[in-house]
Amino acid sequence: YRINLNHPKSKQGDLILELKNIGTKESEFRKIFEDLTSNKRKDFISWNNKFMIFHLSKRTDDIYIWELAKEQEYTVPIATETSIEERSDIRNPFIYLIFHISKQIVFIERNMSVFASPDSTTNRLEDFFNLQLLEPEITVSLEAIKSNKEFWAEVAEMDKVEDVRLEFDPPNWFGTSNEVDKLIDDAYKNSFFEKLKISLTNKTKGLTFTEEGFGAAIERLAAGTGKFFLRGIKNGETKTIVSEKRPFKQEIEDAKTEPSDELDKGFDDAHNLE
Image 1 (cartoon, rainbow, N blue to C red):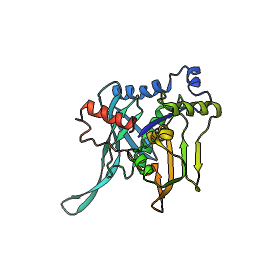
Image 2: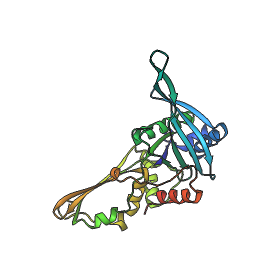
Image 3: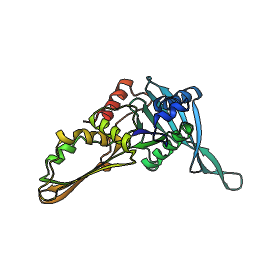
Image 4: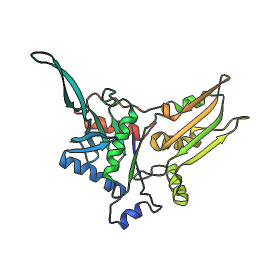
């Protein structure tokens, strides 16, 4: 998931942080990791339930491994001399979280016995970060990174591309990486949009939609900063490609023992989608 750090609710963005003698978005975000490294544990409440974040290890200046646990009450049948009694106890099932701060990415373990859906996990993690960033008024949102590995091959197989919709979120990374980033940044500075939507349609002759012309835009959107939708014709039938149905997955055998260089390579693959 891409960790988006959204500007304070002010058109001045990072400037408002400077006026309050608060650091940049990156420095404020890093403080959370430094604090947890020192204190080892943070408890928080989300939707009337108790959760815990534990620092497990720091691999590099950027790579941290945490555990996200929840408090869960359960009952156990216990045999007494005369009957079976139901007795309550508490357990704390957990999942692993692996962060790369500079790339603003987190790998989240999928374990449905702990969290029933990816949304329930990301919502709890967003709640935790937003509680830590109340004073600088930075809000955190997590967006799934989408795989675009087969995207252009699928587009090439279409007889005609009729409809393309691109939806960009406001800029919320520490830096920019390509010409699309710069265009989005300029558009935001001049308009302060909440969503920038681009719609292209030509059902008669079809659109000219190529990797050369739109590759950077799809790369940015797939990287967790928006959504894309494409509809076209293949062999006489309508075919659609939707970004939300193309999750990027990283296989990690054991979070505690995975070599740091392998983790770094996984983060590079997620950050620099091919």
